Structures are given as C-alpha cells and as structure tokens.
Amino acid sequence: MIIRDIFQETFYSLSANKIRSGLTILGIVIGIASVIAMVAIGQGAQASISSKIQAIGSNLIMVRPGAQKSGGVSGGAGSAQTLTLEDVAAIKSEVKNIKAVAPEVSRRYQITAKSANTNTQITGTVPDYQAVRSVSMDLGSFITEYQAKASAKVAVLGSASRDELFGTNANPIGEKIRINNIDFDVIGVTKSKGGSGFNNPDEAIYVPLSSAQSYLIGNKYVSSISVAASSQEMMTAVQNQITDLLLKRHNITDASSADFSLMNQTDIIETASSVTGTLTILLASIAGISLLVGGIGIMNMMLTTVTERTREIGLRKAVGIKKIYINMQFLAEAVALTFLGGVLGILIGWAASLLVSKFSTLTTQISPNSIFLAVGVSAAVGIVFGFYPARRAANLSPMEALRYE
Amino acid sequence: MIECRNLKKIYTNGDVETAALGGVSFRVEKGEFVSIIGPSGSGKSTLMHILGALDVPTSGQYFLDGKEVSQLNDDELSELRRERIGFVFQAFNLLPRTTVLRNVTLPLLYSKTSLKEREKKARQCLRYVGMEESKFYNMSNQLSGGQMQRVAIARSLINDPAIILADEPTGNLDTKTSQIVMKAFQELNHKGHTIILITHEPDIAKYAQRIISIRDGRIESDRRSS
Ligand SMILES: Nc1ncnc2c1ncn2[C@@H]1O[C@H](COP(=O)(O)OP(=O)(O)OP(=O)(O)O)[C@@H](O)[C@H]1O
Ligand SMILES: [Mg+2]
Image (tube, rainbow over all chains, first blue to last red; front, top):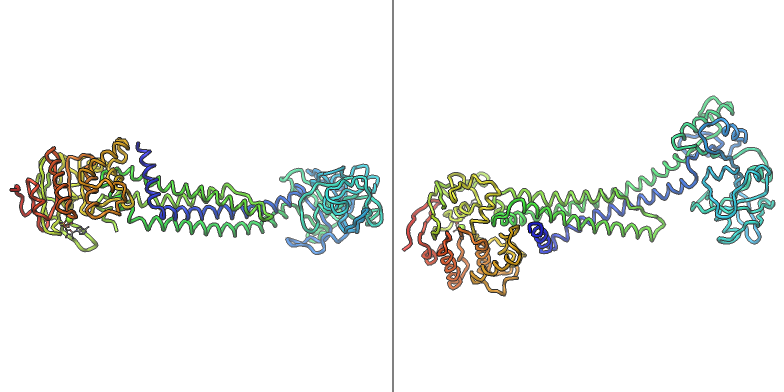
C-alpha cells in the first residue's frame, strides 16, 4: 500500500508538473548525452590511431642508420649507410630476449605488370619480417628461407599494389612483375592492414633481401633493422643491449654521436596518443561544460520550485503524513527524474555516437566510464537538489513550512 | 480533552516581535461545540494552529487527551493530526493542479485504507458539505473560493476525526451553503465530535453552545451561547 502510494504520488506529481519535470529531465539528458558522445568520439579517434600503429607489429624496435636526435624527427635518419648484415647477425646472436630480427632495404621503383604500372616502395627483407611486422597472407606465401638464400627473383605484393597492378582482388600468383627491368615471380599477396599515407604497408612489394641488394640496390648496407622483443617488459632492456652492441661494433664511445638511432613502437604510439589525448580532453571539457550547464539547469529548476514544494510539504505534514513518507516520495521523485533523464541521455548519447560512426571514418567507442561519470554527476545533482530541500522542509513544523516564502 | 495553560505566542521576524497570544487558558470538554470570535488580528488563527498541533507556542502548555503536545515527537504529532484532528485552514491550502478527489483523500495517503474505500469516503464527505458532483475531478485551482472552502472542509472530515478545528469555514460561502456546512458541523457534534470554529459572523457563532471572544491575544469573554 505504502509503496504503491509512493509510486502513484510520484507519478501524479511529475505528470501534474510537466514543465518542471520536462526541464529537469532535459538538463540531465543534455549533460549525459553530450558526455557520452564526446568521450566516445575522442576514444574512437585514439583507438583507431593506436590500432593502426599496433598493426605495424608488436613489441617492435626499429634501428635505423643516421644520427641520434633526441625527441624530434632526424633529418638524416635512414639516409646514411652505417648498418650492415654483420650488425644484424651480431644482434641476432648477442642480444637476449628477442623474438626475431628482420633487416630490410627499401627504395622506390617503377613497377610494370602485364597491363599496368605503378611507382612504389620495394622492400628487400627476410622471412622473419613476416613475424616482426605481423604480416599476414591473403594469397600464396611470404618469402621463404630457401628463396632468401638463393636470391630468388620472387615478389610478395601488398594488397593495394596487387589492386593497382592486377585489378582489385585479382589472383596474381604465378604472374610476373618487372622491377627495374628485371622480372620477378609473384608468390603471394598480403592481407590489408588498413594503413594510409606515406609508407603504407599495403602498397609495399616485398622481395628477398639478397635479391634486392644484388639486383636492385647494388650495395651491402641495410636501410633499417626491425627487432621484435620477446615481451613488452623486455623492450627497454633489448633497446639498451642493441645500443651498447652497435656502439661497440661501430667503435663509438660517446652515445650522443651514435651513427644509428632506435625508435620503438611505444614512442610512436605515445606521440600519437598524446595528440588524440589532447583531442579527447578537449571534447571531454566541452562535455563537462554541458554536464555543468545541465546540472545548473536541474539545480535551478529544483530551487525555483522550492517555495511551492515547501508549502506542499507543510500541507502534507498538516494533514498528518509522516516525515518518512514525505522524504520517500520526494526522493522517489528525484530518482525517477534522474532515472528517466539518465536513460534518455544514454540512449541519445549512444545514438549520436553511432551516427558519427556511420557518417564519418571514425569508429566511436562508448566508454562505460563516461556513462558512469555522467549518470553519477547528474544523479547526484538531481537527487541532492531534489531531495535536500524537501528533507529540510519536512523537518519544519507544518506552519513554518506553509508560511515559507 | 483540550486544555490550554497560559499559552503565549510571539512571532519574531528579524528584530520585530509581534505578540499574537498573550497568555490564553481554557478547557474544552469532549463533545463541545465552541465558537471563537474576535476582531481581525486578535490571534484567533494563531491559537487554532497551536490547538491543531501545527505550530508550537512560545510558552505555556497545551494538553490534548491528557498528553502535553510539546512533549510529542514529529511522528507522534503527525499521527495525532491525522487520527484525531480535522483542520480547516482559513486559506484552504489545497494542493494546486490536483483534482478535488485527490485533495480530499490526501490525509489517507500511506494508510491501510484501500483506494476504493478512500474514494468512497471522499465522495461522501464532499456531498456532506454540499459540493457539486460535477466538480469532483476538477483541478483545485480551477474552483471558486466557496468551492475550495468546501473541499477544504471535506478534507478535514475524511478521517472522521474526534476534533474538528475550522478557521472561518463559512467565510466564502453564501447563506444557503453556509447553512449546509453548519448543519453538517452540528450533526457531527451531535454524533459526539468536538468542534471549535472561528467566525466573524454572530449568526454562525450561534450554532455553538459556547462562545469564546478574543481580543489582542487574550480571552475577553467565555460564555454559554443563548
Ligand atoms: N508569521 C507571522 N509572523 C509575524 N506575525 C504574525 C504571523 N502570523 C500572524 N502574525 C500576527 O499575529 C497577530 C495575530 O494573527 P492571527 O492570524 O492569529 O489573527 P486572526 O485573529 O486570525 O485574524 P483574522 O481574523 O484576520 O484571520 C496579527 O497581528 C498578525 O499580524
Ligand atoms: Mg485568522
């Protein structure tokens, strides 16, 4: 009976004061929906960037020739010729906790196939490259140990290069392509990694390192060495070992004048994340302001009606309704409003994020934390400002409450 | 059953103090019908609020059924107001944007009475005070002054209280409706209810067996009605 009465009174009171209830709910909805949508967009951006970087390979350390420059992009990195296959062999045999090492040389060439041609990056590398850079195959196979040793004239195409040269989704295995006027047999096509821009792995063409060195580039230097550490925790140790080893091998005592540089994936992710992190913070602050505005709206609504509500409470007490029931009813009202507003806000925020996903390239990510935060703040504001004045009024004597101005 | 000893009430608004009651003492026995008369501002409503356990006196004692009301806690006071006292406010005090029936059943909220029973009782009380049936579902703020007054009276009767305290219950009513309401009070009184009402009109005061006259917060006279 009591529970039903409280529900009924709550329903009656909220529907009898539609504008008051509506505006309160609106305040809650605005706050919650904007927080959820904004955070979803920010996190979506962050996730998509780090997943693209992650796709390069995991626990990856790249050694490149050229001067070590702290923090910034080194202008000369990659252009100098300081790393050799002996360095690669030394890393392989002396550095502990590594999974695989893959040297590579690369240069852009004009490529021709039967009916098309393109200009793209040729990467000469070893079978381990597949493990180090997490390359997975769509068709055929990657370069084999035997082909690497024999300097076979074989090529593995990135999915975009295949599309370019042989047509979208064609099967080019067994066909020939011409690199620098030398024929190579196509033995495989990699799965798309969805990268974009410069050095897109989907646009690359892989050939054995020895073939690239002898038929195409004509020297013994490598343009970078990719090292996969055995685990995330070993990254720093592996990096230090490589640095020490190469400094010793190149007879350099001062680390700051090293003729090579190391970069790990975490650095790249961190740099990129700090950019998207700033974006998320920006969006979150906009959302925070919306939450604040919504909160002030709720507060305002509740406080402007406090006089009327205090008199109502006075009357309820005057006819003999106990304080606890008055408190329960007003708490139920505040909870009902914040609940309705919360559910609506979540739905609208969700819908907004889905729309952004649908009509832009961003895949938004709803974060449970943002939902908890937004709902928590609005619920707290709604309940505190809905319930607190009521509780205070319920502690007055009926006449004090009825006379309240 | 009602006993006041030297009741005083001083309203304090900032620095301004208004003495509304300056020491009022009287007894009302069970089953009495008492009128309180007096000029405007003499403290009648103030006294009535104290009798209705809606306000506390600044000093003095008020006993209801032998219990000192100032000793009761908040819940006991609520129970007292609900079970024992029907109060009709001078300013009606109805819930706005709420139907007549809901206003009348308000004191039955959170009680064991079923919804059906509540509505039945409310209809009875409303008919008893001469309220038009067609207005039962009107919003309280869309009623005339006289209609609101009758809703307020009906609400005071809903719990069949032993004591009915009415602050100018006929102030907004025409002679005919006043008579209906006063006849209702008289009938209730004959059934054993104790009734105290405030009025300005000598004609209304005559329904009572006893008339207490108040002036400047003190009892001026207390006599049997002729
Ligand atoms: N809340 C209050 N604060 C200060 N003074 C008050 C308050 N309520 C009443 N008074 C004062 O107390 C005195 C008695 O008021 P009360 O309402 O009891 O008069 P009344 O006899 O009921 O008058 P009326 O016949 O006009 O209803 C008046 O002088 C009034 O101004
Ligand atoms: Mg008065």
